[in-house]
Length: 298
Ligand code: NAD
Image (tube, rainbow, N blue to C red; front, side, top):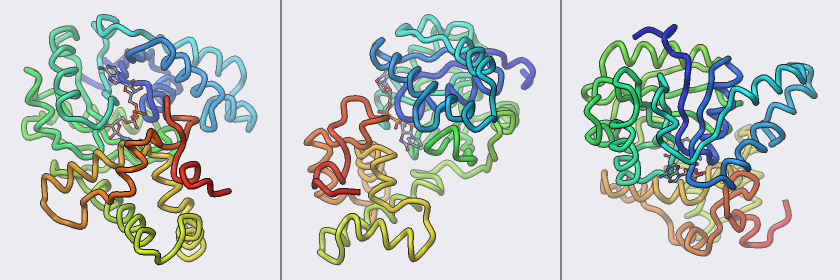
């Protein structure tokens, strides 16, 4: 298989990441089939692709895209609640919650449905790619393709080969990432790869400093922006990522490495268990994020 053979892209999971990935693929000229568990989520995903904060409408307003191009782009995205609709995709990107068993279960089903030549990519933030690949026969066609949030804006794709990923699969993934306008950079398969291990340490440290009374949530965000020039502070970033995703990652990294500094702080758990899963605009069913839970004005 070559990059030119990739015509139809499947995206499984239409949440924070999946809808943005579908948007990028459609904007790059690909036919996209976006799958999730219910129509309500898919409807919200399409709304976000069109008129969300990082959606196509914004590009039309900035003069980077015509209204006709936007409509054509929207037409290239088909939605479905059935995996059967993914039968003929050439490249599949999975963006379901960060849970090894869930990902394995879904890939095992897709392995039976999708055509044999199709490449399977997981957008896991940090689960060992080789461990997810155990669920499929096509281990040579299985790879980690780690996008960043918001997917239409952030340029890095961390490309992670599983133990049995073929050179061909790696090369097509790298070339496709470039076609999407992204910069692919390889990292080795290990819990958290590079980026997640690095950012997790920073995020959980910010929570611990808050728990220890060193500074407030808003103050920590402001200090990070003003002192270090970061575009957003750690609490704002967690609200964007999704607090449940941050928790899953911290638990996974801690369980795999047994290094205490990766462990999820108790305050993070409290918010997630209370339904505060992050920014309501992206996170389906969330009651809000850090600022909402503590009633802090931005
Ligand atoms: P999310 O919870 O916003 O979205 C996941 C979507 O998957 C939901 O819409 C859910 O309904 C759907 N889903 C659940 N079970 C499904 C099933 N059986 N079949 C089809 N769809 C199903 O999560 P997210 O933030 O988009 O994260 C998705 C993946 O991307 C995770 O592995 C996460 O670690 C990774 N990731 C997240 C970020 C981030 O900033 N949020 C960044 C990079 C990578």
